[in-house]
Length: 215
Image 1: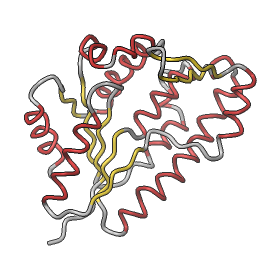
Image 2 (image 1 turned 90 degrees about the vertical axis):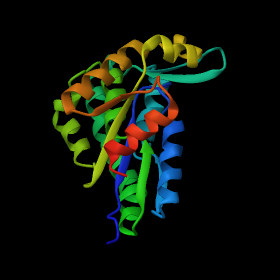
Image 3 (image 1 turned 180 degrees about the vertical axis):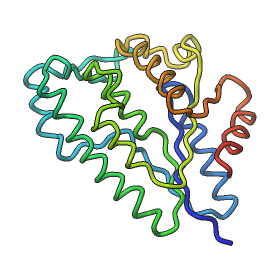
C-alpha cells in the first residue's frame, strides 16, 4: 500500500541543530523510495511588505548585527497598538499563501514535506515582536494552527543555553534570545510537542526522530 504523504517538521530555537537532522531525515526517506521535498516555512512576506517598509521608516524595526557580521532585524511592533494588531493578520495571509503553494500542492502530488520551522516558530516570533506571549490564544493565533496539514508530525529539538551559545557564539548578541528560549519551552509543554535533546550522539538523535515521526 502506498504511503500517504506526510508533513514532517523539526522546530526549535536557532542553534539546536535542525538543519543537520532535516537533511538526515530527507536522506532516510529517499533511501526508502519516498518522494519528499525540503521547505523552509518560518515566515514569508508578500502582502506584509508595505507594512514592514513602513515599520522600518517609522522606527518600529531596527537592524543590528550578531557577532559583528550577521545582520539581524528586531521588530518592535509592541510600540504601536495598530501595528501589533494588523501585522499578525497580514502575516497569516502570507503564511496561508506560502503553505498552499509550498505544502498543500506538493502533497497533492504525493510528496512528503520535510521542513524546519513552521507555525510554532512564526507565533514565537510574533509573540516577541508584539510582546504578547499568549498570542496563540487569540483568534489570529488559532487560525495559524488551522494551516497545519493533516498527517503531520512535529518534533522540537532542545539544547541547553550554554551549549547553543558555544555552537553559535554570535547569538550572545541577540537581545531576544532568552525570551525566545523561554517561549519554545512553554509552547512545547502547552501543545505536547515531543522534545528531543540534541546533545547526544547524532545517530541516537536521528533514531529518536525517526521513531517519533513513524518513518
